[in-house]
Length: 103
Image (cartoon, one colour):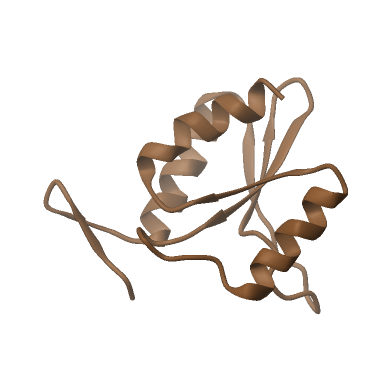
């Protein structure tokens, strides 16, 4: 498991995901776990925010990149008109949510 230090804490993908879920709830939305049996590479979460704002979010440990199948899935979803983000740091969460809300 890839770990990064942040103020004495281990930062993992799970930690970043928990922070995303809390931040979305704080804005009155939901960050639903996205699982699609039989379809590999789908993003980890579907973020639903007030006023009908929706986006997909792939979460990674700091410095980790999306696998090729995840990049293909991102491209497919974007071609359908959906916003798709990859977050690998807690500091990115606010900016991503701001962007989703203003879309």
